[in-house]
Amino acid sequence: MTMPTTPDISDTPEPEALPPTEPTPAPTPTEAVQAAEGLKEAVAAQSETAASLIETLDAWAVTIGDSRISVWDSLVAITVLLLVVIGAWFFTKIIAALIKRATRLDGTQQLLVQKISTILVWAAAFLIGIDILGIDLTALAVFSGAFGLAIGFGLQKTFGNLISGILLLLDKSIKPGDVISVTDQAGNESVGQIRKIGIRAISVITRDRTEHLIPNENLMINQVVNWSYSSRDVRVKAPVGVSYGSDLKLVEKLLYQAAKETERVLKSPSPRVNLMGFGDNSVDFDLRFWINDPEGGLSNIRSDVYMRVWELFQEHEIEIPYPQRDLNLRSNEQIDRLISALAGRVENPDKSSY
Image (tube, rainbow, N blue to C red; front, side):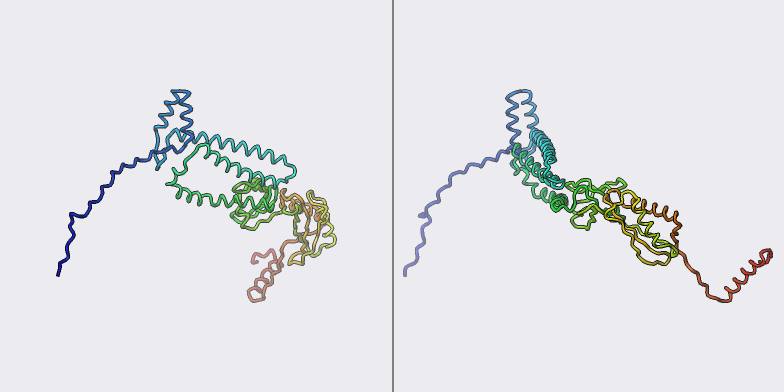
């Protein structure tokens, strides 16, 4: 029987030695604002003093990742951004002036075109500024996630109001010059006229010259009373009560006369007097008339009509009653004794016992 032979280790070939690897050079930080580098070279070719100052500003820098941002880069970026912003602002003013000359567009369409063009101009200005500066946006990759999330939450309502304003102008439900009802935090309702529709909110001026800024999104969600949506004619109601002894035909005639003799009351549609019912203390009428300038106020025109009604009622001796009540006393011993004592005092006023 033969025994297995073990291989000789000396016969195994030795592994070949790998060639030595050279160390990888560290990446050189690049300029985050490429326009600053080109401007620096152009200025250095013109003046050595300016070049020295720029070199000093460029030496003060901070490195973020693979990008390098210096004070010189920041100054160039701020200057370019200011020029772009000023140029975009002037361009929007020129577009607004051209849109106002477009006679084929009404006020709402002009405002809508102006806002859309403004958005496009500022978006183009942002892209042009980035292109001129040659900013390497990867330099901000470390902060892009948190920064974008913060902007998203912060501008959520702003973009919502912007889109709401554009939708309001598209369907023409709310437009400058309309008269709407405004309710304050205390629940008091007042009538105001829309002065302008902004990017974030609309401006409404009430009769007491108080300017309310209402977010556009609120007008899309909440119910709004637009007094001049389809027509500027508004009907105003003025309830009037007269005593039961009055001549109702004469009262009706005087109410019509009061409405016709008051300014701002329209002749057409004509006023209307309705007998509403027989109340506890008066016969109730309702004088209804029309106006076409609700921005002039509703309470003041109602006051003028009431004043004229009062004058006419005084001339024709028409009584406006006040609440009256009859008091019925149930008979008992104490009441009878009190009545007897009062009656005796009336019959004998000189006696001190009473």
